Length: 65
Image 1 (cartoon, rainbow, N blue to C red):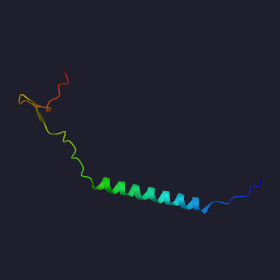
Image 2: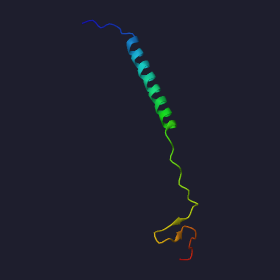
Image 3: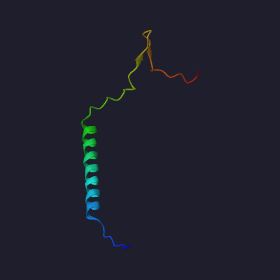
Image 4: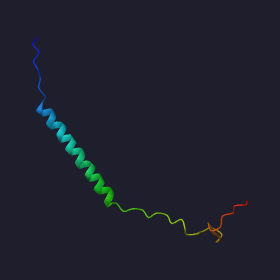
């Protein structure tokens, strides 16, 4: 059985280049989708909270309890 020397396959190189290109396009589309998605507003922690009994909470911290 004769064994011939094999040079790098241009078909394999083309398939690899195509996969790389598809991955780059997919990542770009994901970045665009993420940028276009509406962002949720961050919670404002400086605003006091009113509990079920109508008492304002979150304004005083008791350090001697």
